[in-house]
Image (cartoon, rainbow, N blue to C red; front, side, top):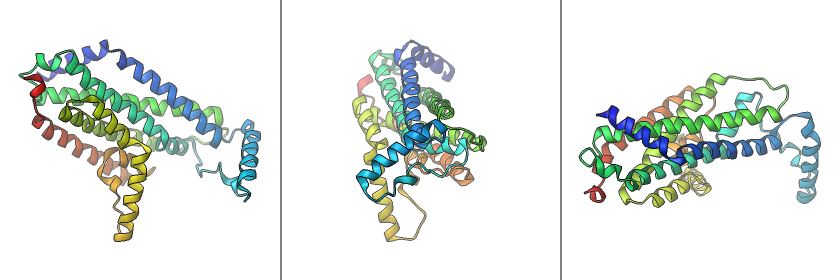
Length: 280
């Protein structure tokens, strides 16, 4: 049963234009942003004149003459640079693309009548497993695209930088993919609960946007004032934790993977409880 469900899902995905358009658009957008970051943080000799001009321009506005360190982000290898970029705006872009895909995927399932055709199996384990497997594959794909776009952009702007520990980068990629998948499952639950994909996209964009980042920072500051603890609100939510995973830190990888598993379990527990009104 699971195999037939998964085959049907994959067949439908192959027919959807968004399945192919979203990855291509994601690569193009992230590559452009990667080039913008490279333009600012790169160490290539041809960037020296651009950096000096930018520093002089900002110092003239600031008046303090302290902008000289603007381009020093403290990375010593390409691996560290990729991690730095991967945990800033690039993560937002890739996870938003995943969330949009998940919402469109849920919408297509309902729009083309697939959920009604398999009403007897709707929200059973095989049905939900197939959905989760498809979303996992797509989360890995789009996270990989984000990583490749960054790696493709970096050599244009860096000279003589060591490759660094790319084993840690691959571990970070794997755990981040799982966390994005968990965030994706959360959005699917929201879409099914409200029977509205627009709500899922809006919640997903708010959850991964700058508003949420500022909110996390405020709550974390409050937690620090109240108690001396390393706990952060980021430790509870998949995407939020993906922003604070530490490079080359085993605990971060283990905790991130465990957090993704917990949210996946919540998905399988809560999904059957979603009302079936729209397929009855």
